[in-house]
Amino acid sequence: MSKIFVDACLGKETPYTPVWMMRQAGRYLPEYMRVREEAGSFLELCHDPKKAAEVTLQPVDIIGVDAAILFSDILVVPDEMGMDLSFVKGEGPKFSDPIRTQEDLDRLVKGKEVADRLTYVYDTIKIVREELRDDIALIGFCGAPWTLATYMIEGQGTKTYNICKKMMYSNPELLHNILHEVTQVVKYYMEQQIVSGVDVVQIFDSWAAAIEPSKYDEFSWRYMVEIADYLKSKYPDTPIIMFPKGISAFVERGWVYGNFDVFGVDWGTPMALAKEKLGDRYVLQGNMEPCRLYSKEATTECVESLAETMRDGRHIFNLGHGILPDVPVENAIHFVNECKRASKRS
Ligand code: CP3
Image 1: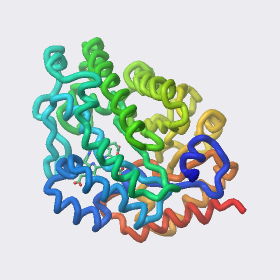
Image 2: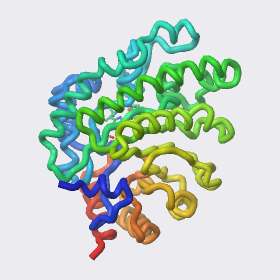
Image 3: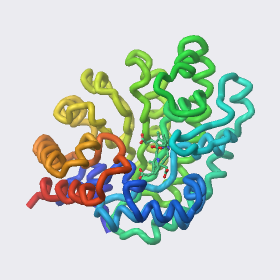
Image 4: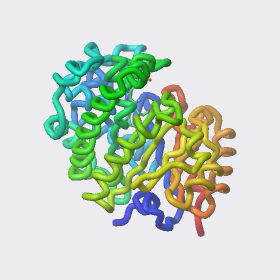
């Protein structure tokens, strides 16, 4: 059975514009909180394929999206490279042993061996694929090498990125070595996600905007393109979504090159501008400001405006970044219903 989400990613005409939400599996759903409690910690949930599959499937039934996103986290990759990951309540992710020198990098596990350790992710995918309706797509994902490297180098989330940037300007060779190793792991990891059954993959460069424009290609984009080239050479029919958050300056220049299908537009970039500069080359995804979900009226207003801008198609509805934990579930359902209503083609 054809999946409207996959068709839309490949630029084919669909009966309406499909919709999913970044972070759609998560803390705004009481059903998720129940499973998370049973699992113990967030990481234990990621490591438990049955439970991870259950929370992957929840938003499909509860809010009616056209694609499920695999439940996991981008940071399981550095964790399996041998870094010690923990999630500290109220503070987010932490690595106790950040990478600051070549010797630190040398001691990590590399390449295919890391991808082979992530069996719990592939097992989750296989369970989801068995239980998911045939017409609903499953999205696999990874972090961009740059976004992963920010956590590996800083040891935690950061507002200033000063340790990474000190490395960028004073020891770029080491930063490139780190980015190169992460890229090799992610290539094999995404390949195994595809082999295990995901229909589409998304690469999240959540911290793209931390890099000044003249350095973005060198330190982030080219590594994402290397991953996309590798996957496209082996799996040309699997759509790839790139999501570089906060690079409207590049969009303005129409600069963005690469062998991928869908460009994820963040909420700070006007969709009309993205359409003008990139719409011929890529299907565009996005881009409602996630906080509009607090108001049904604000949601409808944005969905109608997006549907009007993208009335010729080549679009996937989404938020311009992740949903927040205190959004009422009925407002998330309202968003999905409004997207389908506003884009229905008779
Ligand atoms: O529904 C989905 O989108 C699938 C699951 C998913 C999670 N993380 C679950 C999660 C996905 C795609 C991610 C990706 C991820 N993880 C990114 C890139 C996407 C983005 O939003 O920019 C990043 C930067 C991370 C790293 C990460 N993981 C952070 C910064 C945090 C803490 C966030 C916070 O608000 O505390 C996490 C934890 C995390 N990952 C949660 C979830 C549901 C919350 C954990 C919990 O249940 O307490």
